Length: 150
Image (cartoon, rainbow, N blue to C red):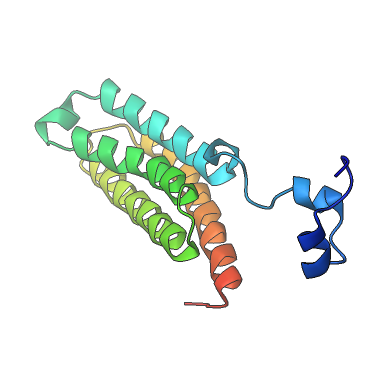
């Protein structure tokens, strides 16, 4: 088999498949290539920075909860990419989405309690919403691959 020839079984199963199709994949080779993970990672970094700037968060026991929920977003996106089955991927993407909403609730609480400056939280919320949209897109794409719309 030379560089551009296809294995015999591929030709029999998918005669219209080009050799270049075998080299390109719609699935990224690393979770780091996903925009949802990249944005979730930025959200987690910024959430950690916020918790480090405000010692009052420790008094309310919210710093650890903010860090955990923020860290869970990119971690679960990464874990989803490590799953072979679409159902498992969707499950971990749902967990990432739930963690994003949990982080949002914590941020709104500390902002409204006056524990942090509103500008710090207001800077992070649009990043979080973008992450949620990107995760929703990943979920939708996998549901379409499964043929379900739930």
